[in-house]
Length: 300
Image 1 (cartoon, rainbow, N blue to C red):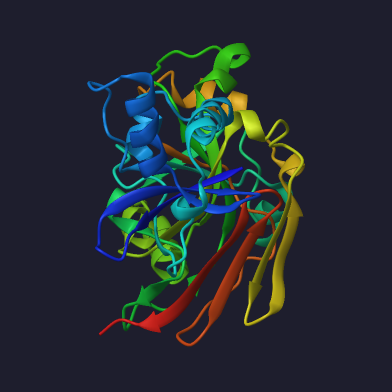
Image 2 (cartoon, rainbow, N blue to C red; image 1 turned 180 degrees about the vertical axis):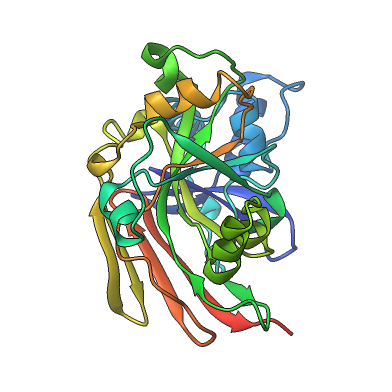
């Protein structure tokens, strides 16, 4: 089961659910559920991130809500028949935390050593780009690279999280492309400056298209990953090759930063990082999570 955020034909934000019956309008299903269960004071759910923040986001909850409504009415008229205008699964994370050199082969392709502890940096929320969006490359910034990554969405607030309890804080998983202005990054590194600009430009964090609940994906550390540019494979790997796995990452970062519902954790990229240029079409695929598509254009 996959959830997604989208805009209706009336430009209204809604939650959709991809099921065996097709894509369903879960925002409306939830409204019927509230009526059936006589929960008039329960919040409306137009935003997927709100569902995460309220701790409603799980496969078990979604299935129970759909089952209750299905007892009272047919769901045929709740199928989404218009073309889906995807939005990012989360739209207002307090932070996007990324892992550097978390795959040995990727570290090696840039002649870097693997860090002894997780190495974090940040992207800014305004860099988010939805499925089928366009990465905009500003003239004069030089080489720009793709970096396919498994993204973890945090489900509840926590700090000082024990590694043994870390997976309890995961709401779900999606796909990200950590777009990087490589020449700018290297220039900043040479001058001892942070990477914020080269990582955080507008459109430099494609995310989506789906958010898969944590309880629907039992083993996130054994997922095949593939990125293609114009149909040609550039990156191919498996999340099992992470140097530091998700529980260790959550435990480490939460020592220093309080994690909030909706926060995004990018877990690193496998080898095969290479440039993208205007005119390219990029497809990022991870087993069970779908395919994130975006184009590349020259910024006006």
